[in-house]
Image 1 (tube, rainbow, N blue to C red):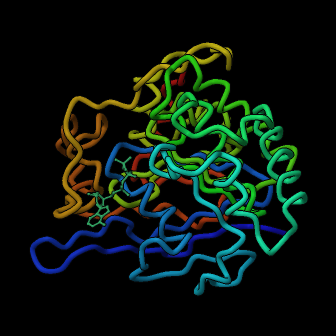
Image 2 (cartoon, rainbow, N blue to C red):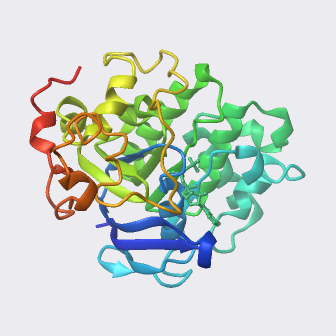
Length: 323
Ligand SMILES: Nc1ncnc2c1ncn2[C@@H]1O[C@H](COP(=O)(O)OP(=O)(O)OP(=O)(O)O)[C@@H](O)[C@H]1O
């Protein structure tokens, strides 16, 4: 079993007036062999959560576990690999593609065995093994992102954390990279945390969708349930802004769908009560009698509940059918 779980995971940055809680007590399970899509606006804490799992930022509270065992050391985390948005930054421009991938292979092996493994990995991500001799500068953004995936897979991970891996790509190639993620997950049985601010992207690949807002998971559940019967008004707002369902994977992915009219509040000074109440379409903005939203922090329910949402009026959202 390879299950990644966050349990009250908290990450704070800075001190004094510049202090902020980027990830605030997150409970989330990424089950073995599934893709959990993590969606939310820029600044909601998605990247920080993934970085906390791989040890790139220290946690200030809670645990990150693999199969129930807390991840504390580099050795504990060797089965986790993160892939980032910008393949330029993750590939050394002076190294050939083959060298970059070979560098990530675990253990020592003979030159011929290394080359064979690099060729296998390039094929696995849909690239011609002859590209091993290319430099990153000779490749397109989509090809470079495939190389970044091959490099991550070279380390023989069981959990992959993919952070906005299609966001820097041309809209026309995003679909093929998403297809590749899905194929790799099925073929290798990977457990994947797939991060994107774009709900249209997340829904192509995810078994489970978790929605993050100002450092918290506000809704999580099976992708179908979250998309067809969202329980949180924030998810509902994201869905209403997203293009309709039924878009084929080969169609271009719309650039940006997760936009609200007003700016997200600052994590330096989160609102009291429900963090979404000042933007919420069913909160005190439209129904002043709903003072509870500004006073009491709604609890999302236990992480093992199949579909949970942190909203005092979650039941009401269901009354309006989603598209
Ligand atoms: N190293 C850091 N030091 C201080 N603040 C940070 C640091 N990294 C992130 N933050 C802050 O933490 C909050 C969450 O950032 P994070 O990058 O995790 O969000 P995100 O949802 O991934 O958004 P984006 O897609 O824009 O990266 C933001 O307010 C950000 O400014």
